[in-house]
Image 1 (cartoon, rainbow, N blue to C red):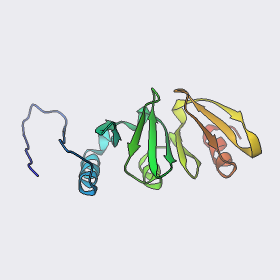
Image 2 (cartoon, rainbow, N blue to C red; image 1 turned 180 degrees about the vertical axis):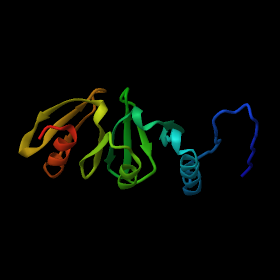
Image 3 (cartoon, rainbow, N blue to C red; image 1 turned 90 degrees about the horizontal axis):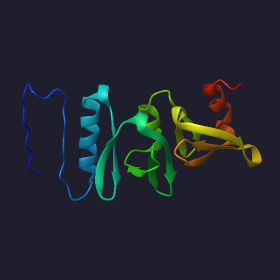
Image 4 (cartoon, rainbow, N blue to C red; image 1 turned 90 degrees about the vertical axis):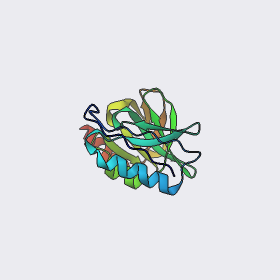
Length: 149
C-alpha cells in the first residue's frame, strides 16, 4: 500500500482520504484507529454505493441489524452500512442513543413520535420517516430515558 502524509501548521484538523477498491478487515481497523485518535470529533465510517462516508453520531437517526448487515439511517433517511457490531456501537455512542430492541438503537433527538403497537410493543417513527419497534423487554428503559414513567 502506498502511504502519503503531509504535515503543516496550516491544517487545523486531521483529515484522511483513502483510495481503496474494497473495505478489508485491515482497512476497517485502520479507520477505527483513526476515529479513536481524534475522539473529540468522532465519526463513524459507513459504506454506501461502494463509497465510504464519515457520519457524525448526531446525524444518525437509527441503527439496526437487517439480516447480516448493520444499517444506519441519517436525518434524511439515507441508508448506510456500518462495520461494527451493534453492542460495540452502543458503547461508543453518547446517552442520546437508547437501545429499543435486541436489533436496534435509536437517537432520542431524532424521534418523531411513538405509538402503541401490538403485543405490548411500541411503534417508533423517526423524524426522517424510518419506522422501528420498541420491544417489550426494552420498553421500560426507553420510557425511563425519556422521562415517561
